[in-house]
Image (cartoon, rainbow, N blue to C red; front, side, top):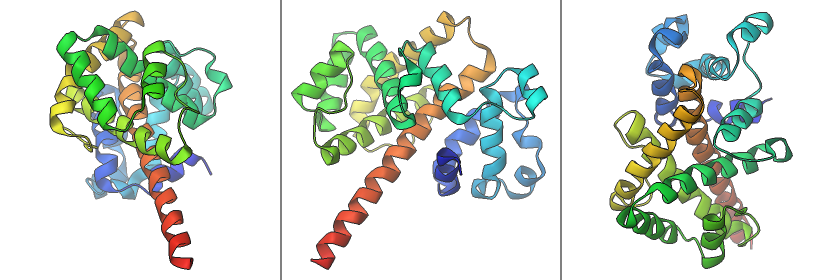
Length: 246
């Protein structure tokens, strides 16, 4: 079973809501709202995850190719496409989670570089509040990989909050509402302008990229947060189980 499909299958309606909204925002291009399950069960999104995942993959593919094969590309291929458009190099060398985090880093770095002094300070404070140590922050500024600079548990805790803040900033820019907010709202406000610029610059650099890229980009960033959230929860459940057994 596809790991991302399984992730969405186990997500709550609240966690799925932004993905559905990003798809519906595509208006005439989307087909989700026309499916029978959507008409019957919306907003109980968990009842039609198959349709959501299928639609998301379609947005990640070429229309003619989609018609020929009857579906969009594999989810990892979709993420590779988004990551390349944000300047991530050698996208085929990453596993899926590493690639998602490399994309998150690329978006945040573009936002940071574009921000004014006050916005940069706000982003720095937010990243440090998230638990990012000096090594991780220096790596972020230099555009080198985050991984390996902290213990697995610490790294996952930091990435959970960083991807949460990014997902929230994107949803506020695109949809006008905040999701996944773990770090304080004050920090999030500092992200909003630069993150919006980073998204807009990517759209412009890719010839505005059409509705597909405008759907896949925020969806991938949201799913990146969901994967980190699930991983963090699983680590804590395991740790608590060991503690109880001891």
